[in-house]
Length: 511
Image (cartoon, rainbow, N blue to C red; front, side, top):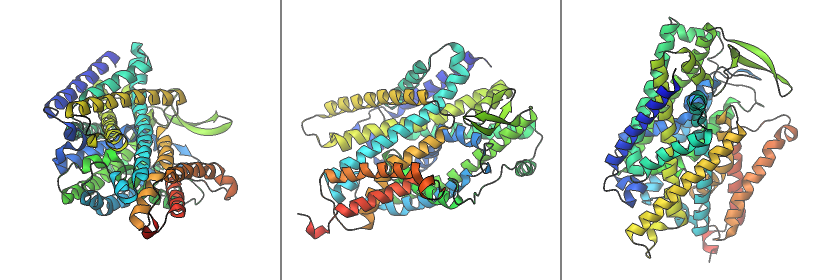
């Protein structure tokens, strides 16, 4: 397929987004940018958040991981263990966190920490969000940009750094003015296109292999791809760890994340915001099941084209890889490799548009939320009496631009690392960076104790990830081959909680 043709569709798609941004961003102000004037439609927010929650990582890594043959057999549908935990996490967000945010009428959710503990905890929480979201968003961005680079722009002789810079410029242009007000609509459009691309690819494979839905499930089962539960207690993928970890990942990466909650609190009423989260949870599990089904179907399709598993020596170990015409398609490149090489050109174009649609929701929301958090939480822009509205807007736009530059730097770092499966990196990063946020909010909600408004709060939040890292790298030696996986977030949050407990006092003891 012509890379020039694919690139033309990428540009055309961006122009559509820019048109939507122009229309929704007219007469916008700082409140439009930060919270959408508290007037967003809950149904649009719920549907658009699917795209943000899934992102390019889900679109590429989840299907590619289904056929991965690890130490315990096929990963198969094992990711569904995490998704089951996600459902528990969404319930906590809807019925514990959202009522708190609405009762306090928050613009930034980290204002809760200000009202509960004081300025130091507030600044610390906002800082950890900025670190977390910067690394998480840029890792997701890198994954999709790398796919576009590998399959389109390398063939056109365009360097990776140019691709990354241009895509960031695109995102910058359509979020510059409208902020949340704009991305509520663009995310809805992008989620629609992403899910449409997913369904079209599934339908094509079923027709090509002459399979009904029931027949496809039978083939997936006989090939071992429908495995869900990992019962090895010492494994990182042990189902109890995955379910509990999935719940806390959702609480931290959605409920304690300004990007995700920024869209929820842009809805006028609490009950509608709760409807948004419940709807999101139901659609989320359904779409993830489709992505996993697509992953299994991709490997069935690849087998029909002559692909097979082979043992290859990698870093001194014999590992099973799936080889299709001398190319290893295990991992992040499985989906794009099969679609762009073996599917009709029309479906290849649909795939690229769907992939771009998976990229933008996680990037535009992150860029907007980071700008909002830095402006509101770190430099206190909304309370700055020394600046008029125009000066505040100019400062906000400057921060927005600087975060885009920071994104570019981080993407280039991931490019140098060149890891084959970025989803594992994202979950590890989340464990280290969201743990202190989980500990801070849990301590505020579950106790009535107060924290000193000093650097000790920040010290505890920095120390917990360091101790967590030491435990993680030594767990196999210290704990009889036990491996710390997704529960790293819980360990980190618990260490933060215990550290805060040590430095806290009863309310009446604080001067």
